Image (cartoon, rainbow, N blue to C red):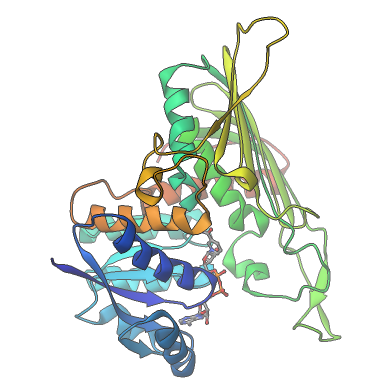
Length: 375
Ligand SMILES: NC(=O)c1ccc[n+]([C@@H]2O[C@H](COP(=O)([O-])OP(=O)(O)OC[C@H]3O[C@@H](n4cnc5c(N)ncnc54)[C@H](O)[C@@H]3O)[C@@H](O)[C@H]2O)c1
């Protein structure tokens, strides 16, 4: 079988998740190409060597540019801080490589657009890590919406709330650097907007609000010196979809007690859907017209009837996890590169997500509704 040689840039949280996902995908699915861990780059030679040893890469470098240009690499996989995605992706694209990049694709929509344009001009395939779209329950929700089972969608109420920035002692990091783009809106809101677009469609106007709750943080862990922070800790927007539905989206990384609340409720004219990532193997479905006294949501539990759950486990209710969504994503990358499925979500889709993010930022700054126009 032809192999797919992967060059991974970044060996942190997501670097490890991607490496695990490629390994698991090869075990779980019957893949058209065998992933091969060709090379890893990290911030220094030493870090890269440690990551290569931990994750099983053949070669290591502290110079990501040499990885992006390396003739043995087919796919450049970028799992670095947001600010680095654009130069890394553009270098890989210039070298004719396919690119798989973490979200948010870039600090601002203009950057994301330049990346999508460059990839399309070069004829290379691109992928973005909106892994929550790969949950079989998300596919089921979309099928239910599209089938009309809950009628016309009239509202999308979504939130992505976590609490990893709630403690004011959490120090400054790349996530709080304004050059990286917005704060919670980019980090978490990007996942939620991708989900809203997946389930309901294009967002055409927004009225946004951004708030910094923790206005100064230690420059480093445990250091007495602090620096001012103006990244959004909380973001919210009223939105209008192209199909006429209304909605509300909210992102927070200071939501005490919430560790992974990517949740939505879709209200239709004849029913509703409700989901939270904290119970990612369940989708709640409500349809109107139930018997009095028996009215309510029912819970659909993930199982082999919700592909590709059955590739992981033959028994329903045994549950998939976060890394399994990444594994499905890795399968999709490999199959798209072999030409047996569409490359999606790609840089163009990620640009659409970032246009919504930019519009929320502009709306919050100008205190008015912003239309998201074509092009
Ligand atoms: N899809 C998801 O669910 C999800 C979850 C977490 C993070 N992310 C995204 O993944 C990306 C990385 O986040 P993370 O949490 O893994 O960060 P992290 O800080 O854990 O890892 C970043 C890695 O990049 C490396 N790096 C930094 N500068 C570099 C350079 N110049 N050259 C090469 N490597 C360099 C670091 O050494 C580190 O190994 C971000 O874009 C983030 O938004 C996505």
